[in-house]
Image 1 (cartoon, rainbow, N blue to C red):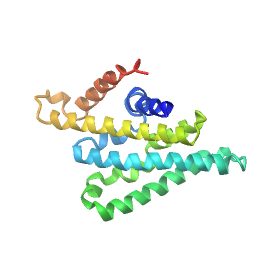
Image 2 (cartoon, rainbow, N blue to C red):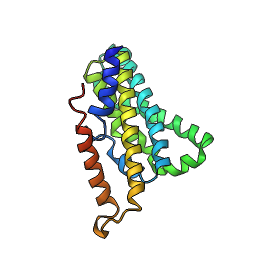
Image 3 (cartoon, helix red, strand yellow):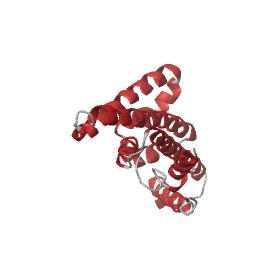
Image 4 (cartoon, rainbow, N blue to C red):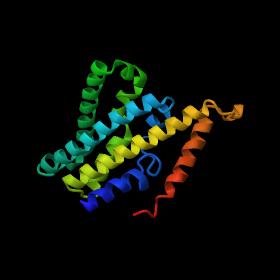
Length: 191
């Protein structure tokens, strides 16, 4: 149990998928203009990333390795992720149409979100068991959501700040992301 907590804390704070490993930067920059969109995207990515990692671990362990076709890993993982994203998209369209519209093109892009595929592959490369895969996936998903929500909150405040004209928009967003990455480096010696 202690090892699982360490994996989760490490994934959320120390090895944050966005701020330390730079995976999932596209939705991080694209969906972070409004806090409500960031929360919705974070929930969607959390669901897809966690479930996709568990399913891809099962596919790897009980299909690809048994049939000795590990070379099909990337294709199989992308198919699993694409199926899950379609499921999330259908549910969001029915249950929360406002959020579905707010996320726009970024919702289908979860399929190609390198964070989702990256975490699935990292779990296999580290030879994690099912429990460790669950902990690492959940930690990375929560870390993604944390970084996205914090960044969205800061960007909303920056809209009201007196920012020089040449830094408005993406330049100040990139500077803010860099400062967030530096701040998260402070957690490095935590575990």
